[in-house]
View 1 (cartoon, rainbow, N blue to C red):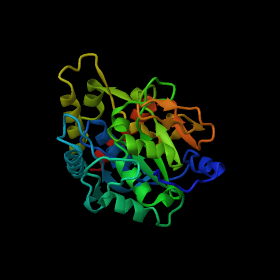
View 2 (view 1 turned 120 degrees about the horizontal axis):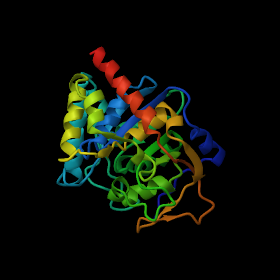
View 3 (view 1 turned 180 degrees about the horizontal axis):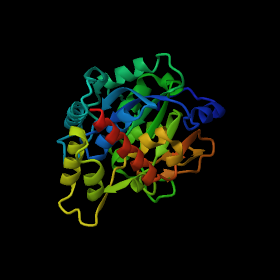
View 4 (view 1 turned 90 degrees about the vertical axis):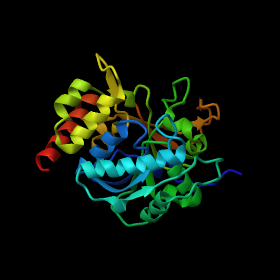
Length: 310
């Protein structure tokens, strides 16, 4: 039996989905050790004065860098602490471990310390909604929604996962790892800003020469980011690398850098294709582009400023 969620009025959802023009309270849900882009996104969020990062959650992942979802989550937790240490930031009490498994169905949650924190934190009073920025498998947020369906009224989710609805497939690492959780995010009616990968987040690319010029030498965190960027490929000749997850932070820092539009939420089919036939669906906001130049200009300048005051 499918979970039922409170349905917000379409006008209320659209208001909550207005691009922010004020300081944002947020939590970051990240599979930090999965690749090298989460580390840049975490740094960018922490260095942006307009973003109040209240907590950081470790998300599960499973690929060649982990032995399974639990190991991926644990490695991500350790990587979060490593990034904070390199930035000389003591926030260990704000970092929480997430799910150790993916959802086995659309009604079977995977409780964790991260979920407990999100549910408690979402009830605190603040100016504006709590933004939940997710840059990995969406297991933790889907679990929170299953445990407290009323959460749809208290948060705005910004999630990087999948591809645009005009793409032949939605199949992408974050989305396909936990298909049940991904379906919940599109079906629940939670206010959602969807940041696709193809033709959007994939524009946020940089190169080793750029990293060597603007990141290396900018404190221990800059040297660490250079180290993991250098190690990601054996051959960097005429090669660029997507720093996908930075797009979600850029949207909150300056929505003009990540243009978006309102559309009806698609149905995510079990075969990882999109179905747009149901015109009764709730609205979501979808990013349509990402302007890499101002995004990296802002990120690099904030890193340099941080290093100069370190």
